[in-house]
Amino acid sequence: MKAIYKRELRAYFNSMTGWIFVAALTVFIGIYFTAYNLLNGYTYFSYALNATLMVFMALVPVLTMRSLAEERHSKTDQLLLTSPATLTGVVLGKYFAMLTVLAAPVLLACLCPLIIRMNGTAHFKADYATLLIYFMLAAVEIAIGMLVSALTESQVIAAVGTFCLLLVLYLWDGLVSLLPTSAIGSLAGLFVVLLLVCLLLNALAGSWKLTGGVLALGIVAILGFYIKDSSAFSNLLPNALGSFSLLGAFNSFATDHVFDIPGLLLYLSLIALLVFLTVQVLQKRRWN
Image (tube, rainbow, N blue to C red; front, top):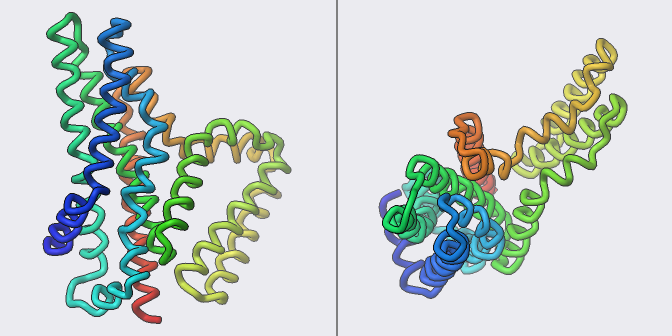
């Protein structure tokens, strides 16, 4: 893993990708810091960070698109798949290299609350907690981009796919509010979610028998619970999907100034899941 990490980190800064990411994110943070905190006098740096979230939709795909897609396109992935290093070590090496690139502008942003303090009142606990969750949110998005990059050999498709997924995540709360709240609507929605999960499982495992078994068991379980107590399905789908709101967890830190431990655990769980799925994609390719 260490060798992969060093190689990837060197590749990011020997090319323009790493420098563009660091420079662009630093510039946008600086612009909103100047506008919100220095010119308008807001004492919370978290407001400036909140304003820069949309920038990740453009920068994260640029950072992650080459992580695994380029290896597959240039056929160098065969060296990785047959090397003594574990696939988990390969994936984590690449992932930690991207997190290191991300850490550079975030560490520079840590100076902003100190500048605020030099000019007036600062809220160090709230601002540095927000910087932590800001880094974790970006880490989740990087894990998403890495998984998408593992699924294709085209960097363009990886970038566009990552952008589309991040757009859905940023619109998540609005999309969830459009879901049906009736019991029968939640039942139909759960069937759709189950089908999507089974399709993902089949893409990873490549076994229609396993997928069919999971689908059948899921349908039986959902119908059984619905027949037993259909009233419990009212608002079930919006409430269940709403708990996976990434921006909701970030807003708890940035807007409500609350250290949201469940939100932090949600980010860590998603990172672990996405890294695991990326490893499984490579594992399937190795056996094929």
